[in-house]
Image 1: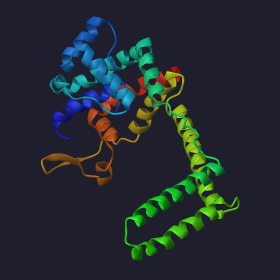
Image 2: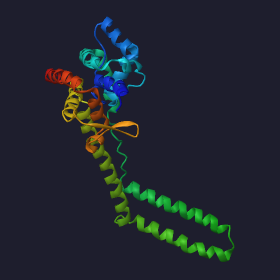
Image 3: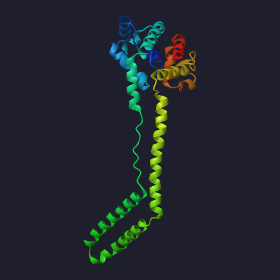
Image 4: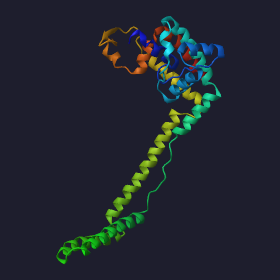
Length: 275
């Protein structure tokens, strides 16, 4: 976590970690200044931010200008980005992008192709008949003394066919019940997937935004900004191994710094209340 990680840290502030968007949309003049400072143009910035927020992971590649920002500029940049973000997320453009994504993730209801018991019975009988016919063809090409070996197998197939023709055959019942259960499981999985989809991607896109923002607050409040670092293998690592095992979201918030968090927290808390 060397000083050059400010590139990642400051841009991460714009997203409030990998699953939270802080995009860039305000007055054109002010926005253009931000693009220049980050080393990207408006279109690139909006695309990166939109993808980061909607897809749930940070698109920061190519943001070359961030590394040139002074450490004490982070708070000002964060404030601007949060303001841009709030405006963009309330726009029809973002709503349209969200609605499209939501539709793409909607589970598809499986077609119920569960056969009837008689369909299962006929399929199994047809399979046996086909195997028996093929065996008879092979037997006819062999010497008479070798054909006898096939007759026992052919007789077995004929006997099995008679068994399957019995309306109370247990094997047919078992095969059919297995397919019925498979169909039920498919429908149950669809219902569970639909319920999760409705939770993860609510109809009201503002609730999606709210969940992303709350996620940031929940993660950020666990970050120990006073955590000690030590250089090891050419990189700065946490002395506390528990912190070293934290995910990238936690670490990006740490890298952005407490000053940025102190600026972001009240802004996001108020934003959540408004949503």
